[in-house]
Image (cartoon, rainbow, N blue to C red):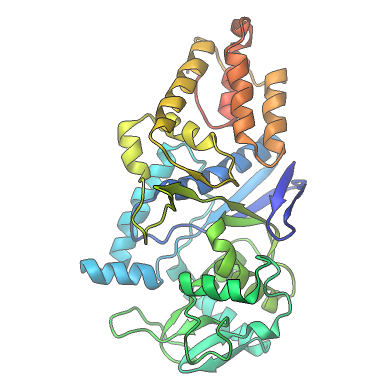
Length: 386
């Protein structure tokens, strides 16, 4: 298996051994999941399925960021408790992902469940000399860690632009350097607050994932990732603050999915140009939505069009017609071999779909019905008779 590693900027060999640990940054539950979320988590689902197909176990942890600026702002706007908002949106997210056929995460820990671990981690970063206190907050000192920037490979000016755009607040006057980032901060009067040795407050965004990954998996994750918009600042900051304490890399490999667009812009809650997963699922069979997403390589940026649904419907009908009445034949076959080869080459799901399309349209497809069903099953698409 070969996967693209963001840190090394190339497709490299990945050999799964034992239980493969996966950590993907989950939702901030203040609105429904959109197609950008689904595409990212589907990529990790396909990865899990192929690793398990190779005979290895997987353990995927997908966190829930249930306390940060966004969810607190939304809860304030609509007049509800932030944890009530989180509970409602997490339930909706889980329902959508289950309908799409995603394998369940081994653990979905919430940031608020890890306050003791976060406090310990912030203290350890301070004790290691990589953080400082200023204006009631605790900041990570990026100048103290030479590898800062080695994940994103961005220049300082690019980092400053992205930090400003993605909640990094480079204009904060309490920082020694605009790129320093918050580990602990005072809470506003209407925000949740926890006691700490630096004063009452709440955690910064990045430190939450470090604490959860350390608690749920350990010092190093086999594959860590999410959407590509998380590379900087979130994953860059997460990586250095973890290594500052453990002395070892947070991840052996970093995997990031491309952005899904609509109307010429990246799909995002801030822009409001969203296609919600549960809306699509109300109007379409889940397998159709899954196939529409899989028709794009996980690393590419692409734009959603309504025609995606019609194409996926045709594909699903073709596969079902070709495998009608057959049970999935999981024995080795040329088709299964082709699908596996595509997935082993940086999760080439579109190539895998094309291989099944070719088999489904073959004049001798009746002899391959069970193999078509098994190949579709490897992609999480059920077409065989029960």
